[in-house]
Length: 389
Ligand code: SAM
Image (cartoon, rainbow, N blue to C red; front, side):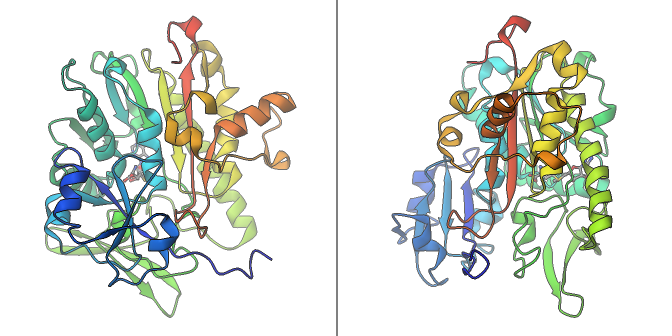
């Protein structure tokens, strides 16, 4: 029944960069003459010539526009006043909800940097009178780190963000003096990318501006091979990458190979997550993927929750009722695929249900207009010195 339904079109999501401008300023300039829509479907089905915007009710400073609207030549885009970022990709920085007393922040897997600049904007908005907070941005891949550098500068986030180009987050020493004040960590590690819009059903436009990890400038459909090519431009050369992350190869439709790939990916994702749990002052973590697979999502969350470091440090999942308003209101939640759950996860049925309800999912091709996405947040228990509120 569902497969017969036409998938909803993907709106063009635009985040207003509060490091440079405000929603009201953008509505009066870049979007002057645009009419306010009362729901996202109104823009989802509109043609590019229709000047309509919808202000997102979950994420502050986010607009949806008709899918084919081309703002890539606008001054606001060129200057970094607006950023093309899928709604779902805005969830992690918003859910992390960094406050002035959270201290410094790490983005462990940062390029191309949409979540980094979002984090920086949130930190700067709230930190007017408090002690200066830093955002450390790790990126292992040198080419992507160059893109990260460019996007951070364009967004005017460079006074907040310290980039660690070519640096492996797993090699970052949690006990080093530099991280003594790190209270919040955002993790968006490499994944299968199975939630990306266009991965299987349409041509990706402006790939870099969506949520994924390739340092992409343009994206072309290879008609013969029915795959998306992404191109990275550095200096005068153009490099062609397959898929979103050239460190880990493209997802394959072959079942056996997919299972192997998911095992390799989830092992790596769990290492990233449990490494973050070691930072002594950390009290908030978000973990996200643009994957639809249980193994990379709830599966990793469950394993992290029963890990030794989680129990030693008192990490637990941030329940829905303690989440920031827009995330509390979001109705698509995690789910359990019991046959895929690691047998070492010895939680009872109610605990498993609570964990799944704390997890946030986005489904692609629905009337919400997002890509496929997953995010969960972790906090430290009050008895370990940190309050959840
Ligand atoms: N958060 C980014 C954004 O919103 O623009 C997208 C991140 S992408 C899904 C994952 C990135 O993590 C890739 O650029 C990859 O090179 C990087 N990465 C993977 N493993 C890493 C590690 N151990 N340390 C630092 N970066 C890593």
